[in-house]
Image (cartoon, rainbow, N blue to C red; front, side, top):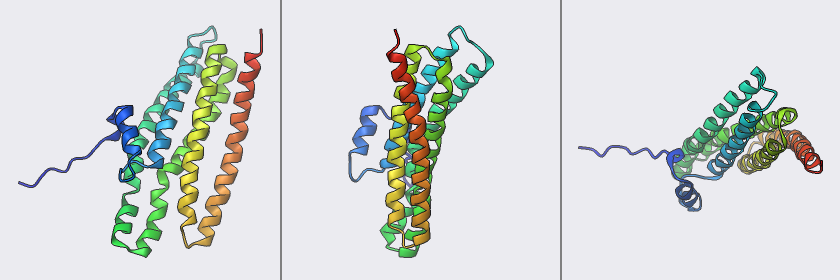
Length: 206
């Protein structure tokens, strides 16, 4: 009887086991899985802040919406830890076979989850800013911590996208990816700075 194919689900790993696999140069998890892990922590802190705000005096349907959607976001980012490994499969196979045409074609697939992480962390930063008016001092700090992790995860994921695009022989693809990343990071940095400034201002209040 043929051996059954064992599919490893990384999202079920302990933090210790996952980080050990990320540290292994021969391991399947890579930069995207690391960025997705940081993104999941960012979403968790965002969810915590939303739940804290929802327990405050300004309870309303909008805050309940944030609680539901931040929970969905956290779960989604955990799922992307494994999806990053899957999306790089075609590139790994093409590189093993040495087929340059397939390698070139597989690069866009390989960056798909990292692009999604960048996108989702932009939404995380936006929600952190939107929640500021509802947050007490403690919740504001959780929003700032979420923003720190979200922006870092986005930078890390975007860096992989830039690296992969730099290996492409398609100059137009290289330019488009660089320019889109530049504009996206500028937008996210602006939101990140506003959240950080708002929390710093709250911290100086007496």
